[in-house]
Amino acid sequence: MTQFKALGLSDPITASLITMGYEKPTPIQEITIPQILGSNQDLKAFAQTGTGKTAAFSLPIIEKIDLSRKHAQALILSPTRELAIQIARNIEEFSQNMKELKVTAVYGGANIDEQIRSLRRGTQIVVGTPGRTLDLVKRKALSLEKIQWLVLDEADEMLNMGFKEELDKILRSTPKQKQTLLFSATFPKEVEQISRNYLQEPLEVSAGQKNTGAANVEHEYYLVSDRNRYPALKRIADVNPSIYAIVFCRTRRETKDVADKLIADGYNADALHGDLSQAQRDLVMNKFRKKHLQMLVATDVAARGLDVDDLSHVIHYKLPDQIENYTHRSGRTGRAGKKGISVAVITNREKNKIRPIEGKIKKKFVQKMVPTGQEICEVQLFSLIDKIHDIEVNEKEIKDFLPDIYQKLDGLDREELIKRFVSIEFNQFLSYYENSRDLNGDDRPERKKPGDASFVRFYINQGKMDNLTPARLMGLINECIRKRDVEIGRIEILKSFSFFEIDKSFKEDIIDKMNDATFNDRHVIVEVTSGQKKTRSQNKRNKWGRKNSKPGGDFSFHGKKGKKNKRSKKKKR
Ligand code: AMP
Image (cartoon, rainbow, N blue to C red; front, side, top):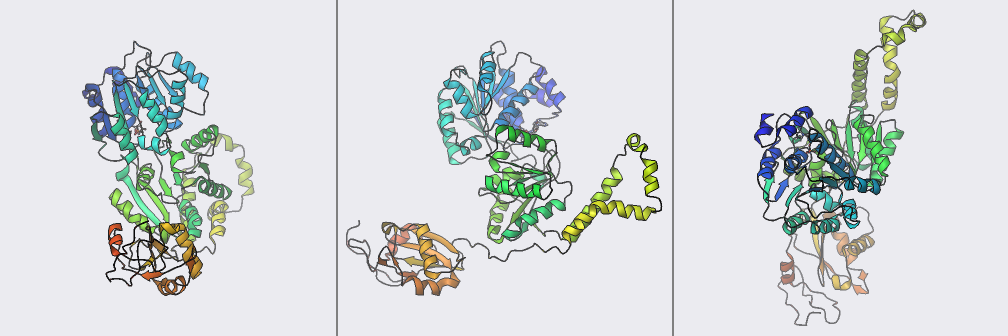
């Protein structure tokens, strides 16, 4: 505890930290606590959930707050109701020995009058979601005039959730003289913009390790076809009988769909997504926290603010589009010194997402094989045996029934009894997995990267001025060659002509069939062009023209790849 004292925190706070079991500061706390205690400089911190960031900004604010005054001195903005409540609870715990300190959480989906009453009673720290906070400011129930500390927690997530306008309005209602502390796990340009607009020469700090748990996380993937994704998920759950996992999906619909299937198949699972009412969300989260659910199927946004320390697995039913979301998701396991596994279920077409993630997390994925029915049965059998071995027998309750039970089972020897007891549960797995299929592998080809050597690049004499769009071009290609699953790579729609890449095996088809086509009453011309990617300016210089240009068209067509074509002298449209 001396370590917290050495950072400048006083006895009432360090005493509460002892009660809470905090032994030493985390890296971000080591930096921010003395910094905020000793300076009014703004701060821009790179920190994810799990790094101890809540204490990193709360402890020095609590230390400096003027307890003799009852007005709001600190405003902490957070993206979700759950996170706001969690921060307020943490602050209550940190200040358990400071009875004069009051904290109020304000968030949507709850009675506003009660929150107004709480604010009127006097509170020094307000933790709120942007929407409700602004509402309270507008109703004059919350005055930001005397705010000395403004914390933007999970700034990236607040912006992701569309709170930009609210943030701007709230930030403009706060006094110029204050200390602003911005915490974010990622720094896309929107966050940088907020930082530029509202922070003055901030000190930039990083939590060092991106996530306290990251080192303990192993990353695995299972390669399956799309139709085997759900059966593979079930096998992953079955081969881990004590699984406690969040299963991440990309859409609400998918989340609901996967959860419904799991429930119908007898798993302890439920869904967490944006369509649920607040009461339903609370119910699901509580069930999961209490481990009454083994698997929580969730979208990235809905799972925000759900702080669970001992997840055994994070499962990416579908990988996210943004790598940051992968690190966010996987950082939810492997916490508090425990091992965690981050599992991606991917198809061939999603395989190219793995390499960039590996680059970011600086770790390699291990490809795992979806377990066979036999492997699962074996694991389940021994898990059952362990359960029987470890079960606590309630001697008192069972005592009266034992004579009758012994009598009924008379004549069965030890071996026979064991076999029968074990079979009660095991038979269900045996019959389910009898004749089970191999789920590994995906026949569909991998999605090629734009510029891939197996693509061929075409020029087409149609462009923006012909109202060509990528969607229309894809429609035209499909219509001409009448084949499904034609892989199309990069499409570049320029002013009067365009380029597209297509799977090499369709090269002849494209030449034969598209050159017969018309688009917007104009004859279509396609030509194979250089396989290498050209920049737009090179393309302009390339002077590919159009044969049937409309009157006033800016290029005339002069022939094949490699030839220097003369640009028409006609004026550009
Ligand atoms: P946070 O990043 O603020 O969400 O914190 C993640 C978890 O770490 C929470 O459960 C905190 O209570 C816990 N925590 C934060 N700081 C410390 C510390 N110095 N020692 C032990 N646990 C901590």
